[in-house]
Image 1 (tube, rainbow, N blue to C red):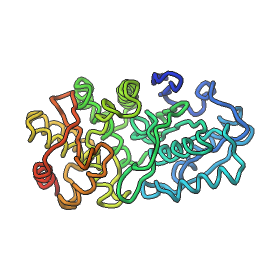
Image 2 (image 1 turned 180 degrees about the horizontal axis):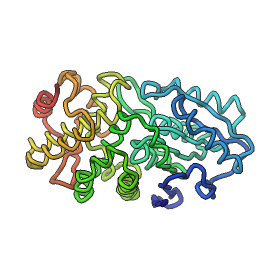
Image 3 (image 1 turned 120 degrees about the vertical axis):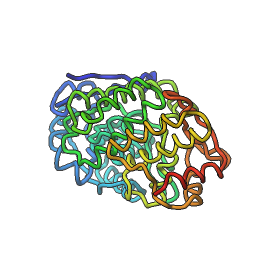
Length: 360
């Protein structure tokens, strides 16, 4: 059963389509922009699985559906891949009516969205996320970016897609490690916004690990609903939307410190949530049993709960270039009681103690 949501952003509003078999349903694509050319961008892992089906579905909308396969992985979310995308658009004579389609995980979605925001000062694009992490988080809300060696997602733009198409069938081919990484972004919504959803995740974690159809459908729908509500209130992350970065300040430091792609984004976020909840506890915002509860759940999802020993100095250096930092002051998303989040700073000495306590 298909379950559509809507992000309410005035003239930039759009639907999030969630269901099984969506790629092959004509109704999925109805109402999207038509144009002479479209560019379907994927990666070398996903394209062989789903690009043909998507291209067939797009044929009624576009005279020509061009294709581009990028290298797979976070290590390729960079200027070189973005330049390849622009080279293709220009070499094929694509104009400002050309529609870009992002078929893949968060890396493809972020890069295609950023390219769409920049090419000829903005062309339409559609998100077709094929990973759990992308379906519940990165494809929704219009954050687009590439990485810089000094920081994750530091170069980008807020640019909304015309539609997000979450075909749950594409999750069946996801490797186990990627599946667990996606569960990190599902879990994060409970502590920051919906304690009832956290209770549900705990009760259904075994079903989620088995990829039970009904459990997965509910997890994706509820995650997207929470994110849609937050983005609808704060599109450009001036205040409320920052809570969606729970675990990400520590997590981004892990990714940058190890080298992008060594840990998956969701693995770093899972560990980052443990560290952020520990910091919350030491600031007396949440009780120790809640930290232990969340840590157990993250471990059951197959995620790391101990950070790499990069050293507190390196962690702090990477966190100072986090997008939430202000005037060099690191700001963290912390749990201000179960189901609530707050964004605030903390003394470097306390953060260093947390890092030492939480690292392997």
